[in-house]
Every structure is written in structure tokens, then in C-alpha cells.
Image 1: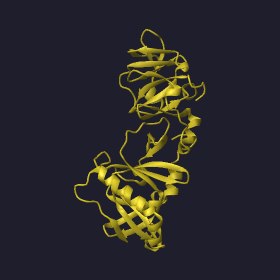
Image 2: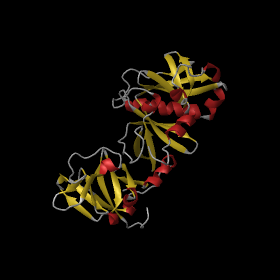
Image 3: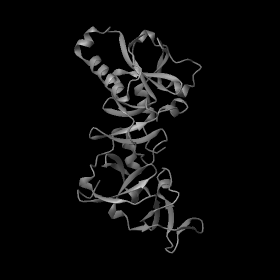
Image 4: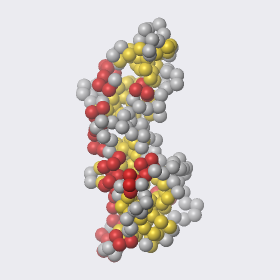
Length: 128
Length: 186
């Protein structure tokens, strides 16, 4: 993960687990976004932002009701719970195991450890 | 084929794990190696669906209680995710869909994660229950039946008759290569 040891990571719930995203890539975090139908795609009410479910985008189980939405590249990505921020130096970052090395091409940078659980670290701008 | 050790009735998961670990340590000790029949290979048998499978003991690093698995984006459905393990990261797979096995009871008390080694890589493989260690000779291994789906046979080293019934022996190198996520994604 580039950015050094002080790089803040935002860890958010997705599906049955969590993913970590460099906080600098997140333009804004929306609380309790109201998702409404739009022309061809869902949108966040009152903001005009396109809405997508982060789990669905990542090929993981989706959130029925988003609790937060991360704004990246002008699009709001819904997640089913609150996130937390940790410094990269405290996140136990590890490279992908060789078996999963191909995932780096898909934007999975490595694996962090949070609360004893492994958490994939994503290059969110690349994969979205 | 001779069963080396059988699990006791009422054995707790912890006791079962310790028993298996002890067997692995014993089997890799130099003294044990000298005593072994040079032509016999040791395998760990385990349950998947209605069948008993086996993999070479030399490919088995550890047997763990089922951990909490963290899903990873852009992986095939058989790749359940990763777990933090001994300061590293262990990918976890469910080989049942690959082998055409209906899902069983891995969430039950008997479910285990087999840490399987191949070269410098390790992979966690879900097992619905760990059975025992058996000795087989190369001669006792029969090729997979010709009637078997070729896509499934590709992952099998052969079949054998054990005292408790038929065993399906997995081809560990073939499984590693087949399960490795492609660069193009699922």
C-alpha cells in the first residue's frame, strides 16, 4: 500500500466481512443516504449523486439498506454499517499471498488485520 | 490399507485437533520414518458430502477449528476468502462445488479447516469432518473411474478401498492450479 505508514485506512463493512480503503480516496461519507430511482440508475436523494451498492460492485453480498455511502469519483457507494479509520501502521498490512497474487490486477492491494480478522485493502479508484 | 488411529466416541473438537496434530508430528519424526514401510504413504481422510476424501499427510500442515472467514472481492464462489493465520494470510477454499459435491454440514461441530501445503504455498480447505489417518501404497490406488465426470477426475489422484469404505484421493498440485484465481477474474 503506497502512502506510507501514516496512511489512514477507512474500514467499512461489506457483505459478511469488511474492506479497507485509503481514506484519501474517499471524497465524502454520507450518513443514512436515501436512495431513490433515477433515470437509468439509482441516485441519492437531495444530492444528485449516482448510487451503487459497494457489495454488488465488488461481487460480494449487497446491503439491503445502506447505513453509509462513500463518495468516490462522484458516485456514492452504499455500505451496510459505519466505518472506522485506522493508520496503516496499525493495520498489520500484509501482501497478498502468492495464491491470490492475480487479484492485485483487480485492485486488491493487500490484506490488513483488524480485530483479529483479515481485511482486504482495495485500490478503490482503480477497481471502481 | 490399514487405519492407523480412530477417533474416540465423545471426543471434543479440541481433543480431535490435538490427536491429529500428534499423529502428524509422530509421522514426521525421523524414528517413525525409519519404521515406516517405504512403499506406504500416509493420508488424512475427511468427509465431504456423502463421500470420504483423502490427501497426502505430507501436504497437510495443520488442522484448525473453522475460523471467521473474510470474503475477498473479485474471487470465484469456491474461494471463500482469507483468514489471518500465524502472522500471515491464508486463502480458504470450499472444494465441494469444484468436485460436484452438494454442500453438507461444515458449520457443525465437526467442521475443520485443513491447512494444505504445496511448494511454498498454503491453502485452507474446508472439511465437514476429519476422519483418520490411513496408509495406502501406490499399488492400492486405482485410477478414477472412467464413468466419472472428466472435470472432476482432473482433481483426483485415484480411489482406494479402506477398512471403513471407499476413499477418494485428491491430487493436491492439480487442485492448487485449478483453484488459483485467474488474472481475468472469476
